Length: 315
Image 1: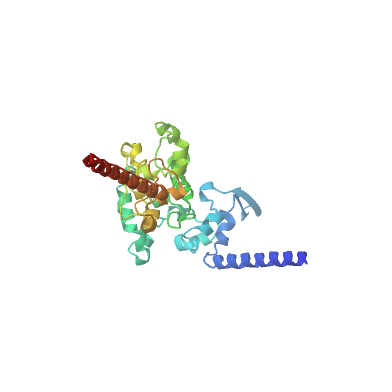
Image 2: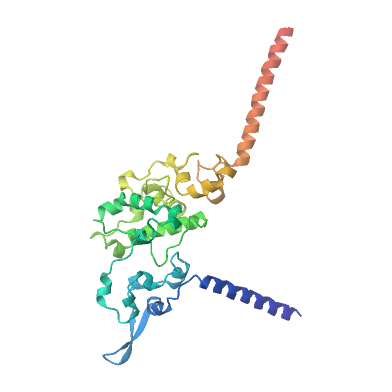
């Protein structure tokens, strides 16, 4: 009997999983033809000159992680929605490498469906950033945001640690990668540890705080700041984060703060739930207890003063 029950349970779990997969699959475009090559480390093709099947290593910069693609914000698009339809034939025409890529504003600009993201504000902030100004306009959205794997982290209420990891991964993909860094500079990227040698407990900061929390100017109407500041203007004052008015409440925790302000009031409970920042965290219970104790102290002092006055008059 137990074997039958276990078999039925496994069958139901499998059936639910299949249904869930099919439900999600409806929102994912069928790019299997492209991923047959671009989703592999090696690819095979029929060499018409030698009449053989050749096996070649794929250029790592042209490799697409199919899992990330199926979880990305662009998963519902076919490759040829953004790339030339001529890519459907193989071997690809070499001139296709020169085609201009779409930018975010080409699709999202002026569209009411994306108004909540304020792409116009993001573009204005980005064009003021040191990246844009120092790169002779070669720096574009895709330098940080991989169109084939970009996921929303902050807006999807993922854990703060994961939000930090995703965000810092974008920065390190260039600043810790001499090949990608070389697309914009002839110099090698400087060691992240050496550049931040002044910062105490580097590891904890890198795991708990985003690079942009110290290296951008916060914009009130943009959820994620895009105005990257020169290194001379980066935050170096510990008190700016480690205080009850932590600047992180306007950047890293801004989304959480807006959603929890009614419940949390002026207490930084939203920070306490997901990370501990010395000087910034305040526990609601302890605050209430401290107010009660302070009230009792004031009551005791006043009562003592009144009793002394009354007793002194009787004498």
